[in-house]
Amino acid sequence: MPAHLKATGKEVWRAVWSAGMGAYSPDTDRNIIQRYAELHDRRADLLDAVEADGLMTIGSTGQPVVHPAMRYVESTEKELRAIESAIGFTPEARLRLGLVAAEARKVAAGPEDF
Image (tube, rainbow, N blue to C red; front, side, top):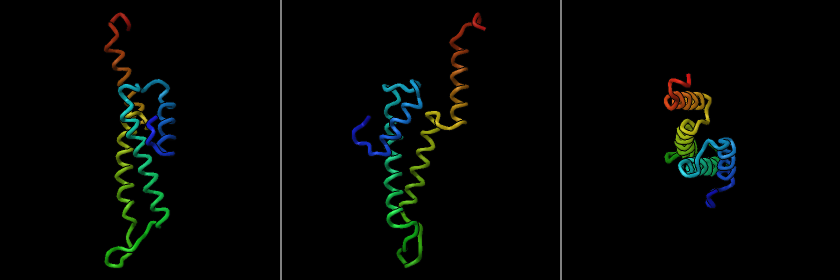
């Protein structure tokens, strides 16, 4: 586990590797899972700032506006969704990856296997 991860990132790191049950390779998948954990840390930090400051704040002309960090929360969540799809953390992604794995087995198998 990367030492720089915070509590949320460490929890996510453990959960991903545990959920993968050997499906992920430390050699090839480490970086994407690290990025996923780092993004969870970023999201947690941003949400902590919003919690501390309140969802609404005062804009430059005195009008109420949504906390500026929410824009970064949304972009972080978009990145998280992309990674979740890539690593099979949604039902649709698991189905797609399962179908891809089944197709790969068919290609690797010879006609005598059917």
